[in-house]
Length: 132
Image (cartoon, rainbow, N blue to C red; front, side, top):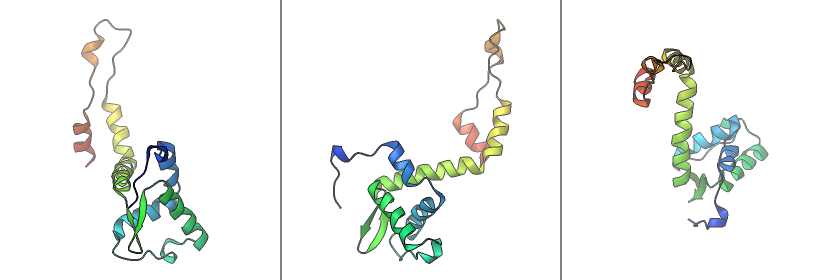
């Protein structure tokens, strides 16, 4: 495994761009699920060879995946990004619940003197309990 120097640091847009389309994200998730145990079949992803290698190149340039013993695996950095994308996916799947939670929140009325009494904000833990 090669180590990166500071000139190769990735930006958030670089990383997001690498997984920004459905097929790249599907490939990234497939690599995670395979965990280096099996070959990834291009045909199961419904990609042409060019699409597959182009997307794989993007994932490698973003240092999300690497090739080890002839198989692709997530890098340590890629595993962290995978965890975050899983959280985003969960939020998207629970969008309606989260939208409903927003309707329970009451924000201060700037026109009232006692507006502090009308303020309630749900904590992250409270939100998690309500969406799971």
